[in-house]
Image (cartoon, rainbow, N blue to C red; front, side):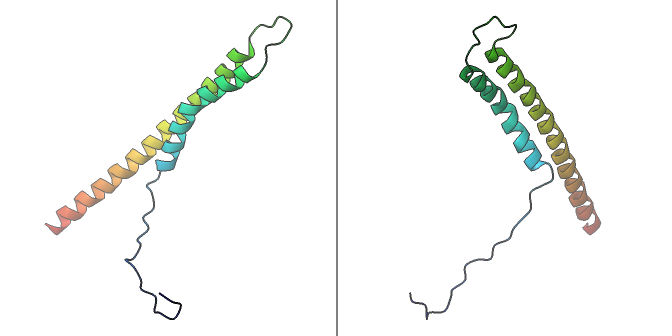
Length: 102
Protein backbone atom coordinates (compact mmCIF):
# COMPACT_ATOMS: atom_id res chain seq x y z
CA UNK A 1 0.00 0.00 0.00
CA UNK A 2 1.36 3.42 -0.94
CA UNK A 3 0.34 6.97 -0.24
CA UNK A 4 -1.32 7.18 -3.65
CA UNK A 5 -3.83 4.41 -2.90
CA UNK A 6 -7.29 5.55 -1.80
CA UNK A 7 -8.06 5.28 1.90
CA UNK A 8 -10.35 2.39 2.70
CA UNK A 9 -12.56 3.15 5.65
CA UNK A 10 -13.49 0.53 8.18
CA UNK A 11 -16.73 0.16 9.98
CA UNK A 12 -18.08 3.29 11.66
CA UNK A 13 -17.37 3.85 15.32
CA UNK A 14 -20.34 4.68 17.51
CA UNK A 15 -19.34 6.25 20.81
CA UNK A 16 -21.83 5.61 23.59
CA UNK A 17 -21.44 7.61 26.81
CA UNK A 18 -21.35 5.74 30.08
CA UNK A 19 -24.31 5.95 32.39
CA UNK A 20 -24.26 8.58 35.14
CA UNK A 21 -22.76 7.18 38.32
CA UNK A 22 -20.58 4.53 36.65
CA UNK A 23 -17.27 6.34 37.13
CA UNK A 24 -18.22 7.43 40.66
CA UNK A 25 -18.96 3.80 41.51
CA UNK A 26 -15.71 2.58 39.95
CA UNK A 27 -13.60 5.24 41.66
CA UNK A 28 -15.28 4.58 45.02
CA UNK A 29 -14.62 0.84 44.82
CA UNK A 30 -10.96 1.43 43.92
CA UNK A 31 -10.49 3.91 46.76
CA UNK A 32 -12.25 1.64 49.24
CA UNK A 33 -10.05 -1.29 48.26
CA UNK A 34 -6.69 0.46 48.07
CA UNK A 35 -6.82 3.14 50.79
CA UNK A 36 -6.35 0.81 53.81
CA UNK A 37 -3.52 -1.00 52.04
CA UNK A 38 -1.74 2.25 51.20
CA UNK A 39 -2.32 3.57 54.72
CA UNK A 40 -0.77 0.43 56.15
CA UNK A 41 2.15 0.74 53.72
CA UNK A 42 2.79 4.36 54.67
CA UNK A 43 2.58 3.46 58.35
CA UNK A 44 5.13 0.68 57.91
CA UNK A 45 7.52 2.95 55.99
CA UNK A 46 7.61 5.53 58.78
CA UNK A 47 10.12 4.66 61.45
CA UNK A 48 9.06 4.24 65.02
CA UNK A 49 10.05 7.27 67.10
CA UNK A 50 12.70 6.84 69.78
CA UNK A 51 10.57 8.30 72.56
CA UNK A 52 7.38 6.79 73.90
CA UNK A 53 4.31 7.73 71.83
CA UNK A 54 0.64 7.09 72.37
CA UNK A 55 0.06 5.56 68.92
CA UNK A 56 2.54 3.95 66.59
CA UNK A 57 2.84 5.40 63.06
CA UNK A 58 1.64 2.01 61.83
CA UNK A 59 -1.67 2.41 63.65
CA UNK A 60 -2.07 6.02 62.57
CA UNK A 61 -1.42 5.15 58.91
CA UNK A 62 -3.86 2.26 59.00
CA UNK A 63 -6.50 4.38 60.76
CA UNK A 64 -6.21 7.16 58.17
CA UNK A 65 -6.36 4.55 55.40
CA UNK A 66 -9.54 3.09 56.87
CA UNK A 67 -11.10 6.56 57.09
CA UNK A 68 -10.26 7.29 53.45
CA UNK A 69 -11.53 3.81 52.51
CA UNK A 70 -14.79 4.57 54.29
CA UNK A 71 -15.14 7.71 52.20
CA UNK A 72 -14.56 5.51 49.15
CA UNK A 73 -17.39 3.22 50.25
CA UNK A 74 -19.70 6.22 50.59
CA UNK A 75 -18.66 7.38 47.11
CA UNK A 76 -19.30 3.90 45.68
CA UNK A 77 -22.74 3.69 47.30
CA UNK A 78 -23.73 7.12 45.98
CA UNK A 79 -22.50 6.19 42.51
CA UNK A 80 -24.37 2.89 42.66
CA UNK A 81 -27.59 4.65 43.65
CA UNK A 82 -27.18 7.14 40.82
CA UNK A 83 -26.45 4.35 38.32
CA UNK A 84 -29.40 2.27 39.55
CA UNK A 85 -31.79 5.22 39.25
CA UNK A 86 -30.57 5.98 35.73
CA UNK A 87 -30.95 2.37 34.59
CA UNK A 88 -34.36 2.03 36.23
CA UNK A 89 -35.54 5.24 34.54
CA UNK A 90 -34.19 4.09 31.15
CA UNK A 91 -35.94 0.74 31.55
CA UNK A 92 -39.26 2.43 32.38
CA UNK A 93 -38.92 4.63 29.28
CA UNK A 94 -38.34 1.52 27.14
CA UNK A 95 -41.41 -0.14 28.67
CA UNK A 96 -43.53 2.93 27.92
CA UNK A 97 -42.26 3.01 24.34
CA UNK A 98 -43.13 -0.66 23.76
CA UNK A 99 -46.60 -0.17 25.29
CA UNK A 100 -47.23 2.85 23.06
CA UNK A 101 -46.33 0.85 19.94
CA UNK A 102 -48.51 -2.11 20.90
